[in-house]
Length: 331
Image 1: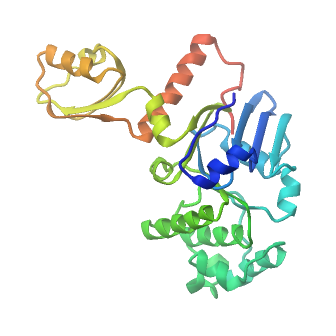
Image 2: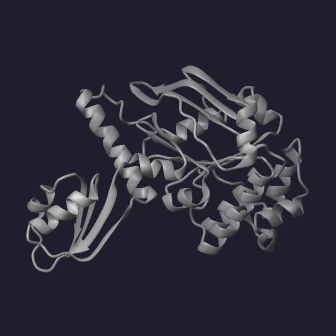
Image 3: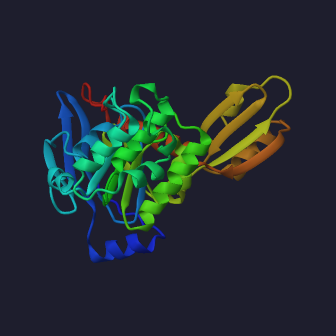
């Protein structure tokens, strides 16, 4: 599967026209025994793009990032980073990574740890600049094993940006950060992208992907099932959201029989419907003799679109036949 998304970013558009991808996956496969964690994935990422990698648990996101960073080797296909192998790109100081896995060195201060990252980077920034950019100057003298979860994340970010990387890979970067720290983090990332760098981040915070990403990739059961802007992903879901309140008992069976119903959620008196023809669905609600209060019809948010797309992918694969043993258990 190969798809190409458009963005409004001028740098990314120019790079795309010149045919200089930062990252290429060409028919990439990776399996663990009977489990096909990444299945025939092809994609290209370009300089100046901020790209969100989404997927439910077990979708293959972690494996895809491991392949990109050279931590694992593909069973088939090719992974190229700036036209070379991941190991060569990393060795040249072109890639910075912030991963959830792996602990930080303890018994050292934040400054010492970040200083080590700078010392090892081929194109290092001054330590004080890195500390300031990551928002950890005020804790630079603190021992690493005395940090909170959010502070640890900011230290990981400092280490990932210790030098002039062209690609920054982030795995759940804002977990444990408070609202202010998240805003500061993404402001720093926008600055990186404005300099022509590529930022790829995996996240479970879909509101972040919606607000931050130029482009969204959706992995599901190891396959790339969507690639586009957040607006394109929402439009692809092909549904709208209908929300209203009902007085008295709610007849779930009658609601599930409504035409063009894609999804239904009932919480107390509140009914939330996903419909591929909202006008017809609302007309049928009134046809049941119901009188909905606080009726709202809106487009799907990215979270609802994500659920709709993954549900549709599950339904299509089930219709095509049972999955081979273990195939759905990607990492």
